[in-house]
Image 1 (cartoon, rainbow, N blue to C red):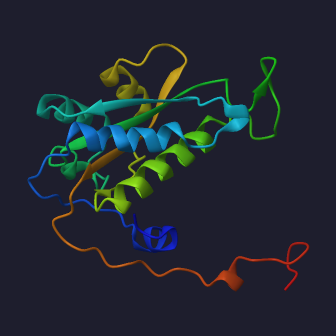
Image 2 (cartoon, helix red, strand yellow):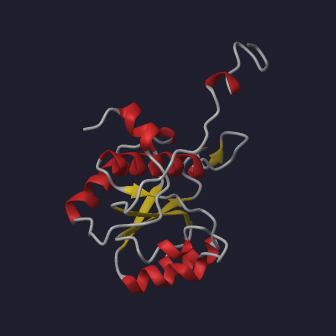
Length: 183
């Protein structure tokens, strides 16, 4: 297993894949990473649709605009994970919103997505988190029931090429001591 900081620093958005399947054991391992993700009051509001067939991957494109740079790569990836969330569970207590941010489902699903992507990269599997889409259309394509919304699509596969790291801010550029502006 790779060192966590190496995995964090090495993970990139991949959009090009080898013609190599992800075995069911690998898919289950990535779903285990989602399973163990932290969530608001352990609500685990996420649901995952695992898409493997060419027909279903092409159906996903109905909800992904042409401007999404990951669009053309959905059908090439061996697997696409559609992370969805049950609304009004995370961030709620006794059916009432508990924070100024309202529903916490996006935060929790984001943690689950990060867990999946890091677990994938630790195995040499590339991913890209794609959120630019018509979520209502995607809900229809995926057959999500009432109260469940698709949040992101994550194509995954063994990368066919390396991706250079983007420029990152230095820690001191986003860190404040004791209060905002404190250096």
